[in-house]
Structure formats: C-alpha cells, structure tokens
Length: 289
Ligand code: C2E
Ligand code: MG
Ligand code: MG
Ligand code: MG
Image (cartoon, rainbow, N blue to C red; front, top):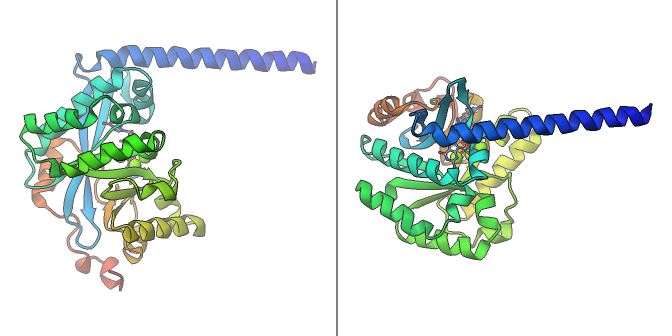
C-alpha cells in the first residue's frame, strides 16, 4: 500500500512538472509575440529623498497584459531570462524608459537589468550607445542589478561596473541581502546605492530580526559612502523607523504605486510627494534626521 501510495505521489509529481513545463512553454511562446502585439507597457515608481520626500528618480517596471490578463514580471522575467527573449525585452524596456525620461525635469530612471543582460558581450558599449542615441546624460540612468549578476564572475563584473561608473551611470545593487554577496567582495564594486529588499522592510515592524538587518544594511551602506534605498515602504511607521535609521531614499506604495508615463510626468513635475515631512502628521513629531 505504501508502495502504491508512493507511485501515486510520483505520478502526481510528474504531472505537475509536465503541467509546469507546458505553462512555461506557453508563456515563452506568447511573450515572444508580446512586443509585436503591443502587449507590453512601462510603469514608473517614484524614489523619494527620505528627508524631504522630493522625487529624485523613478524605477522602471515592465508590465505585460496578455490576452488572458496581466502576468506578473516575477513570473515572466525568469522565463525570459532562461531564453534569449530577455535581450529583446530589455532593449524595449531601456528604449522606452529613456524616451519617457525626456518628459521629466531632472529625475533619473532606474532600470532593472537581469544577470544575463549584464553579462552580455560589451554591455558597457551597449548602454552607452542607447543613452547617446536618446540624447540623455548617463547621470540620468541608474542601472539596477542583483547580487547574482555580479558575484558569479566578480572580477569581470567589477571591471564592468567600474567602467559604467567612470562614464557617469549610477549603479544600484537591488534586493540587497537576499543573494549571495559576501561583504568582503562588496568593497570591490563601484556602486552608488544599495536597495534593501522589500521583505526586510515588511518585517521591520513585526520582528526584531528584520529591523536589525535593516539597520545593519543602512549602517554598512553609509560607512561605504553609498546611498541606501528602502523599497516596499507601505506605512508611516516604516518611514519613521527608516528615518531614524538613516536610509537616504524611500520607495513604496505609501508614496505611489508604479504609474504609467502620464502619471510619472505629473509626479516628476510636482517634484515632491505628501508635502514636507515637518508638516506631516506623524513624521513632524520625529526627532530623527
Ligand atoms: P524589483 O526590481 O525588486 O522591483 C520592486 C518590486 O516591488 C516591483 O514589483 C514593485 O511593483 C514592487 N513594490 C514596490 N513598492 C511596493 C510596496 O510598497 N509593496 C509591495 N507589495 N510591492 C511593492 P514588480 O513590478 O512586480 O516587479 C517584480 C520584479 O520583476 C522586479 O523586482 C524585478 O526584479 C523584475 N522586473 C520588473 N521589471 C523589469 C524589467 O524591466 N527588467 C528586468 N530585468 N526585470 C524586471
Ligand atoms: Mg529593481
Ligand atoms: Mg528590488
Ligand atoms: Mg525584489
């Protein structure tokens, strides 16, 4: 009986793997048509200075609405990353982001690059060519990469980052704390900012451990002379804690969800969100800063 049970479990397992492969293939096939079918869209989420809530930049976040409805980038980006599709999508994202950026008075756009994009041949030349073609200063493009992109081949990544930074691009290390970065290696990379993963921010008010990790990342970033962007900020309590801890920048639903190009233009021209913190009902009473 136990044997039969085992066989049944194995069969179910095989079926669910088959099913998953089928779904992935379908997504991949549809995704390869997404640009031609005009199913992709860009959204932009403001990044604000912690002390003034001034809008300093926007993260560009890709959206895909397929026939059957929206599919999360958390689902389709990893699938694109496993095929060459990521390059085609990435080209589209960068071109679109640089186009929209022109409508903003001075903010930067922060574009996510997957490990495979970052490791492509002559990545530096590629990015430079795109900003030159768009007529944009490199200082207005922030390149977001994850730990996985740079820690596999640290020597080569360090060289690439150095050259990008020399040319004036901003570099942010995304989802910091969730990958394999060794703190020993981090000093070798030419970075401008660390982005604290949303998971830690979310846990901050509930668990001492998350709060301790957030404090450590902020402390590390500051000690290394880097900006620290907290992502996934949803509550005023989180803002108060992040102000006290000294994070330089904030991003999250509390300030704005990701919005379309029109929405981003309006926010960029308004230049500030929620009004200055001293007028803020909760933050105005804080002593941090
Ligand atoms: P990420 O780069 O870490 O982006 C932050 C994610 O957190 C975004 O999810 C954003 O919408 C979400 N977020 C921001 N504030 C809040 C908040 O207050 N609460 C909650 N619950 N979520 C918040 P999204 O847009 O679903 O993107 C997921 C991931 O997909 C991104 O994580 C990034 O790794 C990847 N991705 C998105 N667009 C692109 C792209 O154009 N290229 C590449 N290579 N990856 C992308
Ligand atoms: Mg990101
Ligand atoms: Mg992130
Ligand atoms: Mg993330």
